[in-house]
Length: 286
Length: 162
Image (cartoon, each protein chain N blue to C red):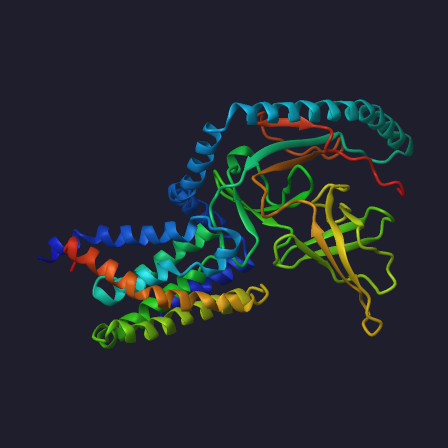
């Protein structure tokens, strides 16, 4: 009876207020060995498969990386000129511009979370300077945002979780809407678009930056189905995430640097890289 | 005598720890929904075998730690597992003498109660109702019960926990 009341009040406190974060993070440090041990079989099998890769495979991989690198470098040459031009134009318009994004690489821990929620655990925490609501990306697109921060780990709510909503924009025409998670892996829905909205299968959705959490211009998803029923006020639109949320192993944590609103950026770490190439040119219609 | 017996409590904690591992170890995407409620099953066994030592309090703590480990609402599993411990202790005299084939159905009901409580608490917190696959885990737990029972009983006898 007492235990029941206690757990109900705990749930209410945890849901409504933020007071239990410290309890959760303390317990999570104590329980970290269990999580580490549970992820050990996966880690071991991965390192074993790395150890027995053949020379041919390694050479092949090296060649592929070499050509990829050359292509990316060639693209980067043009990009730097464009970035400088973009900065100049924005300065002319007197609008704020991003200096760049600071990126930290984190790895997913091979630990199962609640199977009916889309949450993953990463191996970076408060000690790396993470903050709540921080955007998380992978090499292709937006993955989610940081929700709970523990000293050495943090949990990331994926954009496909049923409680997650993300302000997006159609890259082709700049139409703004909100992408809701469906609770299914790799699937988003756009429920607030009227029947006559200009949206087609194959449209790319990018973050609009209006929520203030995600930097604008990152790819999110691609529209895979548009159904317009004349009897209904809204079209039902389904989009598939560009990031492979079920296969992602490494994620990037992003700090956006703006000149007028400097944010606390953690001290340099070994894994840290400062990319400017994740910053994208603004949409053509801006 | 009692001091001697309580020295063996670590066996109970070790089996519960095994339950945590089995809950956390990654499975392929399709198998995730079929993962049985390991911790609940192990807790039911100990409540049935040693009701004077394992009770609602332990169920609450075990559930709270499970909440932290799996990232659910703090208290969701704590509520479920304390109710599981309570019901099992209330029923243990009746269930203990049943043959295994009959026990299985009582276990099914207890596991179902745990799932139902979890559904209520997530529903109250505003999460959507999961698909019907949500209800398959009590069935799997029910089918696994005879093996878990025999395994834990042998462990208990081997280490003379009583």
